[in-house]
Length: 524
Image (cartoon, rainbow, N blue to C red):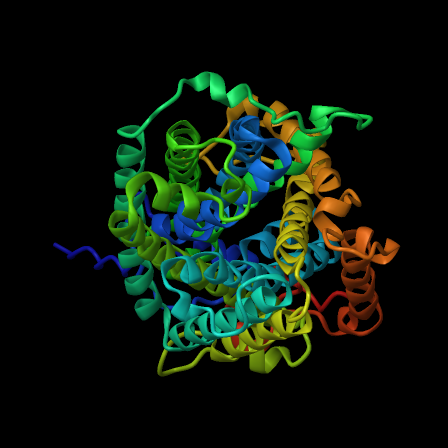
């Protein structure tokens, strides 16, 4: 009797394999599969990072929308849930590095894929800078020792934020350069601490509630005299919620380093988003219901940090704030990790300058090292350029969010077109929206367009908060994103497009592969 051949690692009972999606796209497996269920979940939830986002921009939401801004939290969740559900179908079929880039390329063709990948890569580097600024919002609240420059107001706050942020970026660069295993261990430990701290914080704040939920209707009289009234103020304040709930696609971007990613990635995406919504929403709710003085000026200046210290006392408050510092650190780590995988994916298709170097996987650390360094340097450069800008926090943060939303649109919009043409079919036996796919996809696209426009709107409160007023600052989002998109695509069209094609050292065995992952010559 002939003995059955042993199953190769990564092969499942149904005969499918972890590397099937790579082969379909024309790539050979190169990154080591070491990440399990919790690692992929941790990657998604650390990018979203409940404590980082809520603690960084709570002050902004209160200042521009009052306590009633809380309702932007469920609004943003529902919109992002539509996007996440579309991503789950894609993650089940194509759990590969640089998920946004590869999904946009597969659904919309190589040109849309490049633009989506470029926007996401730029957004990741801007996000890396934005998240790093959260150190300034938290560390000086723990101890004045962390205020190395000035007194923490105006330009000195911005300069100190750049200093602290640069240290954080340097740390995440080193960790990511040493490989995914070290990153995953630090990230998982940090996420465990963050989740425990977040749940404990909810319980502690709930135990100190001093007012009823009616406080959530308090608008502080904001929006009076404006054309849209409070609705306009609410839309501005929604930036605080929009900043938290994105990055869930990171779980899929680590698909080439995960076990059974076609099944685990969609689960990780949904679990990360839902957990963040529930826990983050409860933190914000009980913070508003427990703070001693809802009208305290510190609430719209120091935000949740003030609430924690004023409500729970100095000792417990400082312990919580140290947990926030850990959350910020692992969030930065996850953002950096996602950017590295995206740069690697685009370089593997020869879609970036010096692609052969950027796509090189270190034989020792089994990770692309050069992208970690380049992305880190660019993020620090963005910080340094804004070193004397007091509005650095809201400007960099809002631009980062808009670019992420636009990158997501580069996936959901082509996906909708493919659905309408009858060309999109979820992988059998994997995550599927079934007959709800079309309405969910339509809502995801409408949400993406609407929120991008809302966030980019030329508001002085966001883009020119401190005088003097300049038109180019008010229209900063449109100008910056326009330059990045048009300039980047012009470079691609006239230079890089002619070179596009899977690099030989990364191509799957068989015929030459083009940038779409199908046999043939490079795209002309």
